[in-house]
Amino acid sequence: MTQDPGRTGQRPEVLGAGERLRRLLAVLAHLARVGEESIAELAERFAMDPRVLVDELELAACCGLPPYTPDQLLELVVDNRSVVAHGLQALRRPPRLTPDEGFAVAAAARALLAVPGSDPSGPLASALAKLEAALGQDRIDVEIDAPEHLDVLRGAMAARRVVEIDYLGSRPGGESTRLVEPHRVVALDGRFYCDAYCRLADGWRRFQVDRISAVRPDGATFERRSVPDELGGAHAFAGGGSATLVLLQMAEGHRALVDRIAAGPIEHVGGGRIVVPVRIGDEHFLGRLLLRLGPDAEVLDPPALSRARAAVAVSALQRYESRAAATRASQAAR
Image 1 (cartoon, rainbow, N blue to C red):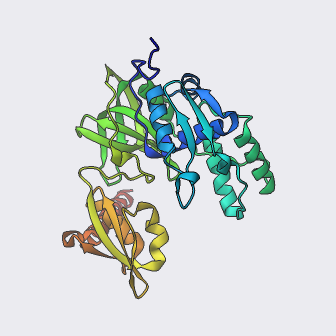
Image 2: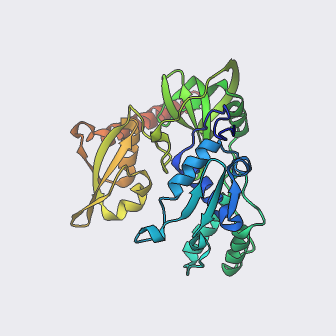
Image 3: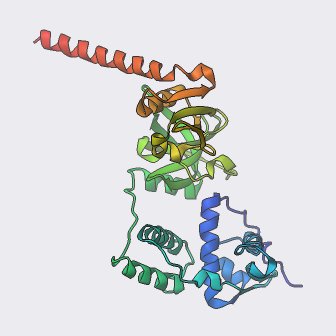
């Protein structure tokens, strides 16, 4: 009796949509080169559960080029033993790119080559070298400075160990000590974040790693949980159950400031104005955002948050006056 390669006893890993896509593209790039490979070998190469691999390949078989007729779909013949790939020539078709598009493709290619199992000397690496040469650069490196506690969090994540962290929140007086179960470390919008189950909040939280001032082992271990869908997006702020959806109206010139945090489509309402949906974790964050946008930005909904800007401004002025008074008192005592 032939054993189903998917029944390995391994627990399927939980990845965000972006990580799954990068891994699938790396798998397809490999199949474009070899044409056919056994499920067992392919799963081992990319460190995947065989059942997950088969599911992802069957999903990829539904993708293709416009107009998405059957003859334009990727032809992947998948069974429990092997996969045969046809029609992947589109992955190798040389497009005409602008310099900005070329840089974006090169950065994405480097991210794909970093996926475990990718061939560092395969067609993708060769194409990347040619692209970088055409861009006039020997190599494109996309690097983010690693914050102090990143490796410790990754180690705790791999060992499934609970850690105690000292965390500085975004609002004044937001320092807290928490027990967390680190499940994933992601790089988004130029910073590292740790997605963890927080025992203090009894829920999922995304912690900015460079705001963690200390990490201490707790001694306990944890069982792997499924990371919620809201932590799988492309933006750093993931919202959560306590997040509030706010509608902001502002001048169109401010769009660059809110593009990365928009929680949905941005609507043009005429007169050079736009309406932007934004999810916020607390009123203090909204107030700081409104101060940055300037006086022409306003809250449309919910109306109760329309005074967030004034509240943050008053709080900042009070802190300034308190510090100024303390400085004057210190100078008078000399």
